[in-house]
Amino acid sequence: MLCLLATPLAVGAAQPGAVGTAPADKAAAASTAGSTTALAAASTAGPAGPASADACPPLLDRSFARLQDETQLDLCRFAGKVLLVVNTASYCGFTKQYQGLEALYARYADRGLVVLGFPSNDFKQEASSNREIAELCFDTYGVKFPMFVPSQVTGTGANPLYADLARITGQQPAWNFHKYLVARDGRTVTGFPSKVGPLDRKLLAEIEASLDAR
Image (cartoon, rainbow, N blue to C red; front, top):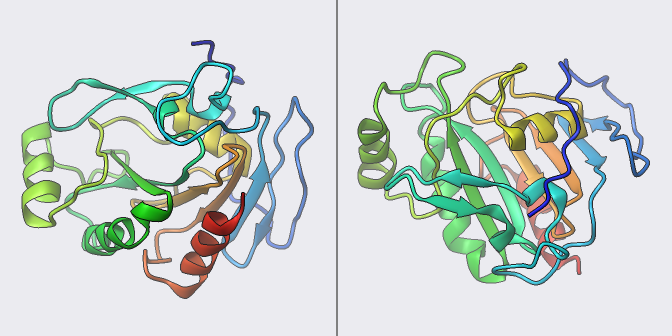
């Protein structure tokens, strides 16, 4: 599959109150009350489940190794879904958000929400082995949503998905458990800082609106 990526750019915090939409070849950030919404260059999302190259938005046209067995998982299978993308860590004050994230997934999976967890040691609070991370999220917190092997989520070495999410929103994660809500079209992305928990009313409202949109 062809992956249409822009060169990752270094980004900082978005300006409060700044609102805009991106043209087809350049994404722009929009920030309001601790969240950021933007429109990325991408095609309209196809049906839920495995998608053809033509139906898969460029944002999702990539694969990552799963945490439990390191087999590749193609994100195109989530085309047409609402995605909550979260960078996780095992030894953080926000680690208990795993509980809320799993509760969200259990509540909304049938309506089309998928939570994607990306462990990262960018903030020096992740375990040193995949096995330890897996035991924490799968055994301790009972996580059933997709989790991936650790990767970088900030800076010039960020994995391709996070590089694009930062470019689209104008925000890269400032800490563990930053959240990106990706709409069904695979183009509209809203960012939420770590302090906005999975069951926060603002996030729930955005998820509900995204799930209802067709």
